Length: 560
Image (cartoon, rainbow, N blue to C red; front, top):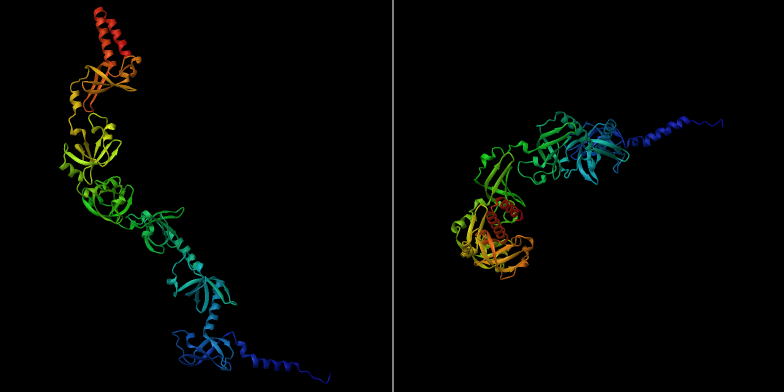
């Protein structure tokens, strides 16, 4: 044991030398080193990094506009020690990526933003080039609000915030939304400080509802109500606005407490209702376009922001009880006459029918009151007959104007719809578009002539011709009259119609003569009271007791 000498240090030194000889150069694999360009060809640059062999790097890895020359110093990444040709495999791209990762890690730790370019789409998001390092941008992190078209954001340098990094897996996740939110918060604070009523701003339509649109003013939203979008009628904001559209607005109202902002677009334009009364004069005819149709009429636009209402009653001379949609249609151009202007209430009343001749006036001019016309019964109602006088005009025969000697309810039964008849025009109201007709006026009123022989207060003899529940029908000199139950006698017992029979002759007093309605009023009771009064007056006169006569007269009045 003592004769054997073991030189451990020498063996260790030889082993280390052997390792360095075999693996020393390979120890640089996966690292970034400095090299010198020793040759440049149209496709490659040969780089010496101080190892046993050189490496070739494609020129495209240096960038499209890179100008390389022999002797330039560059940083490269040692990818592999030797390829099949015995050359070291170098990469400029991977070197740049390593540099980028190093810089990005610093930005992640410090919270600093980084610049990048969105260049591609992947499942769930987009790819971003961060100066050589590829990052993932989730779809939810691209903007504060959903974006339909990302094309305008691609290919441009813009700031991002790094959310997380995993170098082992090569993962980088970034956010554009975080940057926008921070910028938005700063802009919001600045905007709120300077905001005041009357301010004119630019904003982007963020959302559209039935009642208006929300406008992003850059950190704060304002409401643009549908009535403040335009001076003209707008049924829905989507008619003139779209999400993402840039608009100019004015601050109408700003509540500092709840930071609610009311905006307007029409306020940036001149009010078309100024001097409207001078521009659209009553009685003048103008052209307009139908913009909206309702149950009660149609709105007609005379110019942008100026609309008037044509009430259904002012749409046609002859088409009554017809929905306005059956007379005009939306977007139709029409002639209208101005009927009334109320600039304070922003109302203009228009008429369409006034732009055409009034057929009622024309008809009456040709057929004045007293004219006899022929027509066809178009309708029979509970109050009379409607007769067609022309294609557009009807006249009405009231029940009371059908017959002289029959009641209207009885007389109307003699007529049917579609029957041709003659009638006389007895009254005309062009303004109310009414023509009154009469059939009975075609013949002489014999009853009126017969009534000429009667006057109020006359005592007549009448023959009972009919017994009814509440009256007795009688005839006097060819005139039929009705005595009501209460007029049959002074006392209650005598007021029963059953006390009479057909053929009885009674005396009665004429209480009224109505030649217009051919009615004769009779009363047996009134005659009895008058006769009693005369008898008492005569008795009083004969007895010489005037006080007794007065007392009896008062008693008669009470009984009457």
